[in-house]
Every structure is written in structure tokens, then in C-alpha cells.
Image (cartoon, rainbow, N blue to C red; front, top):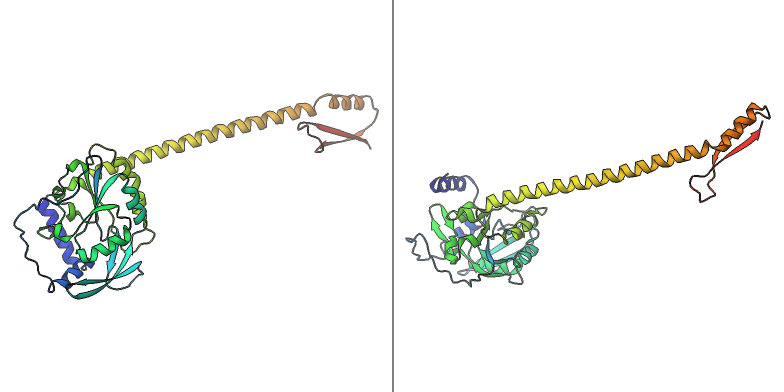
Length: 308
């Protein structure tokens, strides 16, 4: 599928679905804030970001990736914000994706984190302050850093001024990395599922990816990582099962040997003596076999012989 087809498909999806929070917010403030903005350049290069050559860059989207926001307190929420834009007040209810704070803290040990949203700064900043209180994300980028294209906005990774082999973007929309599809990881939309485990599940892969020479193509590397993990798990299960079978066989063999030893002890001199007494017609004994539990000798057994 070429770029035009992707754009057309996303335009159709946008027409069919209900407007999301971002679209509603932008629609609400359209008449309160009109910007004159040059859009004739396809690429708007030159975002001023600190550039380290020791670690790779991970760009994190905000809405439907780390949080979900809405204007009504439906289905529960984690916190609410009063957002003021050009004198207009908005009440926003925010639900945080499970594991966000740990995800950002851990990821910051392996990547330079940049939060980049297509939302407005007035809304995004207070949300980022809550989900990233330690400011692990060194850079925050907003709607004005996005590049308008037919059908919406995209995040041109070239604007970061880094080699693309060192740049990863995690977003719930393919439109966000349409210029650099090999650098994008498409994460499942988050709305209100508090049992969501996407971030925790993704962390091991991202840690592994941070150690690779080239993060591209991210989607293929992820499939490779998952397959390797499945193979290793199967191998580990086989090893555990094999050890368990060996231990069980050894235990069964020991039990069997003990049973043979006990049988031999029972059928030794005492039985011969009984047979001789019977042949000599000395008596007609009633024979009862009893295990002596009062001794530490595990294989010791006795016969009680009583006259009838």
C-alpha cells in the first residue's frame, strides 16, 4: 500500500468514526485561536533538542497511547483538569494507561525520551506533569511541531536532527509516522481498560531494542523478538520437564529397589523355619505378618507366630 492509499484509508476511517477528544478540543477552540502558519514546506526542520550520541531516542505519543481524555466523566477517570485556552475554559477528564509511570521511568534508563503530541500545549503540559512527575522526558513537543499533510498531522522524525537508525516512535496512529514507517511501533489504542498490560509487555522488547545497532524496521524486529522469546520459553519448559521426568524415574526406581529389598527380607530364614515346623507336624500355626513401626530400621519386618 502506497502513501496515498494510506492517507485515503485514514481519511475514510476519520469520516466513519466519531471525533476523538483531540478533534473535539481543536474544534472547540478554533474560533478562539486562529494561527497564521506557513504550510507550503513539506518538512519543517530544526527543532532545538539536546542531542546525545550515547543513547537512542524514543518518541512517545500522548493521547490513546499513554492516556485517554474526554469531556465527560464517563466510565471513570483518574484525574480532571481545567484547561484554559484564549479565555475559554474546558473541563477534561483523564484516564491513565496502567503502568505509565514505571514505563517512563524504566525507559528513560535506556533511551532519551521525547513526548510528542498533536494536542495543544495548554492541555498536554499539565497531563505530562502528572504522568511524568520526575520529568524523565527531556523534551516535550506539541501540535505546532507537527507537519500538516492531507488528512491530518504527522510527526516528521527528521526534525529531531538525529540519525533515523537511532529513533523510535510509539504511537497509536500510523499517520503519525507516515514519513518514516520503519521507525514506528503501532501500539493498541487505550481508552479505559484498567486491565491493559501493553506497556509492561512492551518494556522487555524496548530494552532489547535499545541495544541494537539499528532500530529499523521496528515492526519486523518486534516479530523477531517475540518468536525468539517463544522459542526460548519452549526450550526452558522442555528442560524443566526433562529434569522432572529424570527425578521421577529415579524416585520410582528407588521405590522399586526398596520393595524388592523388603520382599527378600520377609522371605528369608523365618519362612524356612515355618515350613520345617509344618513338615514336622510340630504345630499348625496361624501366621500374621506385621510391620514394626517402633524402630528406626526402615526395612525391618517381623512375623508373629501363634498356635491355633
